[in-house]
Length: 255
Image 1 (cartoon, rainbow, N blue to C red):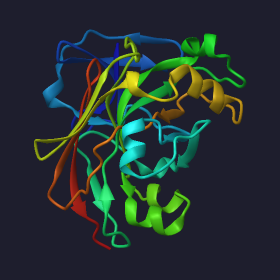
Image 2 (cartoon, rainbow, N blue to C red):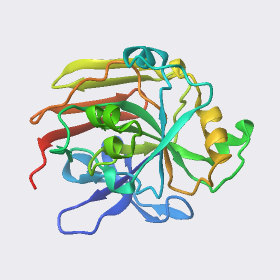
Image 3 (tube, rainbow, N blue to C red):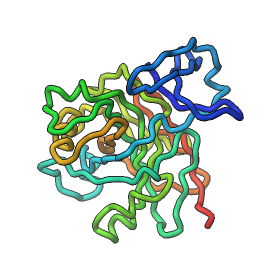
């Protein structure tokens, strides 16, 4: 199932599902009991929002060897994790704003895990039962501030720095899926999820040994090589085969 949050003009934002480019309403909680209406609304006629509003955004750094090489970093012996605030989240077609504090903002296309069940000390063999589904994400980063600060809260935490979408795909195999990122139609990133250093079961087990994972939390699983700057006027497309494409515009932030 493709789960979305959407809006029809002058109506509240609500959950829905997509089938053959048609949208149906979902009544109830997608993380609990719900009913689906017939998918009869054209997808092109609705506005999509971020498919989930996470309580926590847990991110994994340096999880692809080629990305580690391009940043002249060392391969971690355990997953390197950090947090982004929920205020970074935006949805498809929404605008990534370049903050005046930074002169080098870059894209990082990533596979995103959506947690569907509360858990702590989750065993690797049990991870699948705690995952609701997967979506596409873009861990936007102010690279100059990341290098300047030494820790990553400021560089990763600006409003609009976490586009996710276009939907949550509940029927997806994360073992070997192609991740790409295009900027203005030019290919910048391309790699398979099989190239991860720490895979989904390891990441969820490790993170849940530190903090309780709550329903709706998301895990950004790391980006492959090919990061590059974004500029005002750019259109960035992060995509994952088997899930979909996430388009966002880029603009200067006006204070």
